[in-house]
Amino acid sequence: MGKAVVIVGGGQAGAQVAQSLRQGGFDGPIRLIGDEPHVPYQRPPLSKKFLLGEMAEDGLFLRPPAFYDAQMIDFIPGTLVTRIDPAAKRLSLANGDTMDYGTLVLATGTRARPLPLPGADLDGVVSLRSIADVNDIRARFATARNLVIIGAGYIGLEVAAVARLSGLDVTVLEAEDRPLKRVVSPALSAYYSDLHARNGVRLRVGTGVLSIEGQDGKVTGVLLRDGETVPADVVLVAIGALPNDELAREAGLDVDNGILVDGGGQTSDEAIYACGDCTRFHSARYDRSVRMESVQNAIDQAKAVAQSILGQDVDYDPLPWFWSDQYAVKLQIAGLSEGYDDTKTVGDPSSDKFYVAYLKNNQLIAVDSVNAPRSHMMARRVIGETWRDDLLPDA
Ligand code: FAD
Image (cartoon, rainbow, N blue to C red; front, side, top):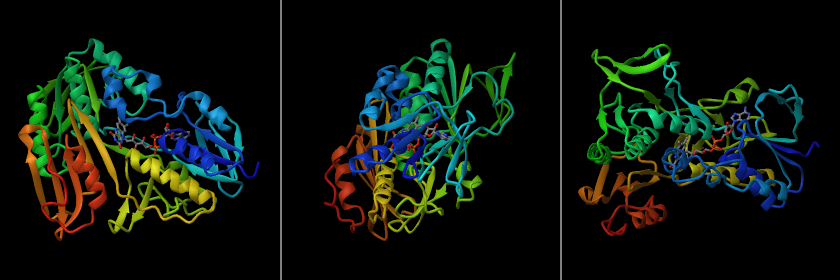
């Protein structure tokens, strides 16, 4: 029993650790504990095809339920872990049970950042993170007319696209002066503003929200700082995510807006590893600490953790990549663009096919490709090189 690897969090990263341990020859007990009722599933389609109704629930599952039995992975759904006792190597569960571990992996992900304003608890104010959230939102969309989305990040804009395709009247409220400001260049923001305007979304930037208004406990609108009320039957709060790092902090592990891990995924306790959205690590490539929210990071960091547990030396420092689907437009991002001092736009945004290369000291650090998959794939190979006009293929 002492050899058991216990994984807390049955999402993308947790499932990958279990799978990679078995693939790497680990033959001890593996327990994978998740608080959701489902087998591990992919989240990206939640705000895309699954919300639109074009994908069935079991299409989200990373592996069929039988996989876990076949691999002797003891998957325990619907079970919240409430406490870690690192000295005793013991977990407390919400159902009153305890569970001992030899090695612990925290893969607890993130949760939607709550809106700290009056009215945020009204019926009809929702956020989107899980299958349960989408089932609730879809039921609301069936009878709603006016959707207001607070936050023009990826999830907010993806839901805006799906809601327009579903016939809803959509307003997106963004406090910053352009959508996706924290992650893309002004050229990309301008493209996405235009794309959503063309599809009938009212995108209002530089717009502060004062409160959510309601009647009889149900949302009726959103009160803006300028005194206007935007009518709403449903309000989606999409203002980012917070790492689920409380278990680790309460156990005395080093935490700083994410569980701190080294290149092998090890926390400040040598028997405890962590991976995925809940972690923060130092990237030598970008010379700073990063916390990523992406499938690439969840999978690759989970593989690194499995390698570490198997006794291999590993120094995880990935080239990050990400994607977002809105209407018929696929954005693919390679690298992190923060800190760029120049950009090159190749192709014509009005043709919905182009890319923006981000440079720092004339070195390529990131590329955002819109409907240009070849430039994205090539970018993942050449990021870090000195820029020249033929470094990437035409859009
Ligand atoms: P999660 O997948 O969040 O899994 C963590 C699991 O741990 C959850 O099931 C949680 O309930 C459980 N848990 C937490 N605490 C406990 C506890 N104490 N006890 C038991 N269980 C617990 N990434 C992309 O690269 N491209 C995209 O297009 C994209 N789109 C996205 C769209 C949406 C709507 C969302 C929500 C995310 C999207 N992402 C996308 C991000 C991507 O899904 C995440 O980066 C990835 O799921 C992270 O995996 P994870 O295992 O770290 O966390």
